[in-house]
Amino acid sequence: MSQATLLGALPILAKMLGRRLGVDVVMGAAQAMTDGRTIYLPALPAEHKALAILAHGYIDHESAHIRFTDWTALKAASAFEQHLVNILEDVRIERALSQCYPGSRHNLDRLITYLVEQGECQTPAPDAHPAHSLLSVLLFRLRARVLQQTALVPLLDPSEAPLRQQLPGVVLDQVLALADTVVQMASTAAVVDLARRIVALLQDATVAGALVTGVTGADPGPGIEPAPEADPATGTDDTLRATEVLHTLLAATPSACGQTTDLGGQLAILLNAEAAHSSVPVSMAEFDPPAYPGQGQGQVLVQQARASTTLLRRRLAGLVQAQHAASVWCSRRGRRLQGRALYRLSLPDPVLFQRYAEQPVLETAVYILLDRSTSMRRRMALAAQAALGLALALEALPGVVVQVSAFPGSQDERLLPLVGFSEHSRRVAGRFQFAAQGNTPLPSALWRAGFELLQRPEPRRLLLTITDGEPQNTAAAQDVIARCRASRLEVLGVGIKAQQTVQTLFGPTYAVALDESAELAPALFQLLQRQLCQYVA
Image 1 (tube, rainbow, N blue to C red):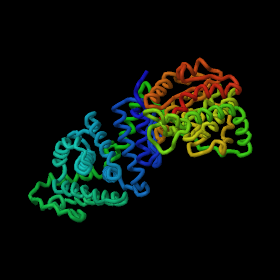
Image 2: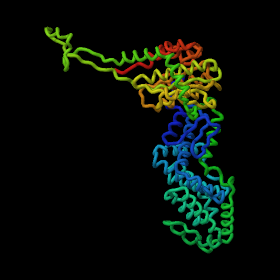
Image 3: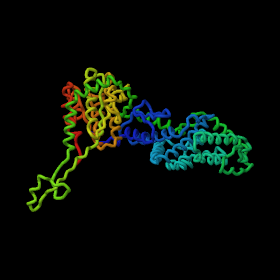
Image 4: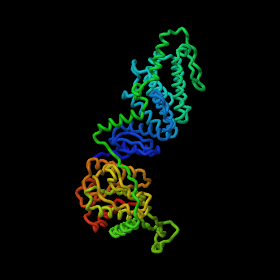
């Protein structure tokens, strides 16, 4: 069984990274993409070094777009201008993100290093389209100089040298100097304006006189010196050839510009390709919107659940009280005399003083997962009653918070939220009235429950699953259970008429089974008395 932890797993790290950056990351989507608000990743394996680099870089890059890019301002007149905007805007937003979250700089630098090592970033071929050559030079130069992505430094000179054979050096120098001012751009609109100034400079350079004298009609921008005049004796053939190259460059089609300028698109393609070849992809369930709890029916469910768990609540409360009771002993020093020990005054070493200390409560977060698959149809009422009754009983204990979800939700890879950590079960009990449906996607539900528990501050975290049968993928479920336990999460199982199944899945020590509501209290007490009611001295 795997001893890897949840914290080292790619889906958990990706989800945590997204939460730290303030964006939603959905694991298990059909393909890698973003809609401007949410980042979607395909089902990825739990352990894969290369995919981790790609996924973390993709999340950082797209998070920067979500936080800093004004999508309404991204309007370009031509394919070349659009690719130019992509390069400049990527540099601006990644620089801005690294200033807010310095850790993103490491992720993105590691990403570019990986792409260079894998040959995804290469110098343009000698016969490459001039637009692709110029865009590659700008991409390598700005990322190496502005973002300090040093893996691109060896590509700079080999990429720039052939381009200088095609374009007048004075014009290329002005373009590079103008592009360097991207560090001064504070918005997407400013980046678009900078791209248009570069295009205008190139358009003016197509005038034969500009190529001969090295002077263009476009303003190179503040702080940029005009290029020195070229020798008028340069051949007419060279001038015409340079003019033709510039016309070809400005009229480039999207395919001629290449794909290297769209980092997000390039990463999405790589992630989708790697995910397609993964043998053990991992999906993490997402939450459906919580249902409105009907108050009338909810109170009926609360009464029924409390009736079936009265014994459980009493026994748990008694056990907690016994554990929490003050320990009293006699000491040689103190402020209060122990009356029953006064006879010891006649002894050489009297122990007369009373000392006591209460055992502190160990705060605990409990996540209850309820199976609502089609096979639970006849047992759904019993299972829902067990989940609600258990939540009510646990909430009454000091230091315990509870969250309850049912799986699957509206789809296999979704969860139906029933009770949140910040909610009270009795106030949302109406949510526990639902029908059975779907399959048993236990692994994705366990991944999400484990992730949520890892975010909790309580020192003890417990995950309890109520189910009636085997999951769709038993090996995947056992793997995530092992990861949870290796991460110091306690994982328990309650089988509804399925003792053999839950004991195989969770282990005999960590599972119980029940066949009817009368068995609910003793079965759950048997399971919880050792796991939950432990307190530090």
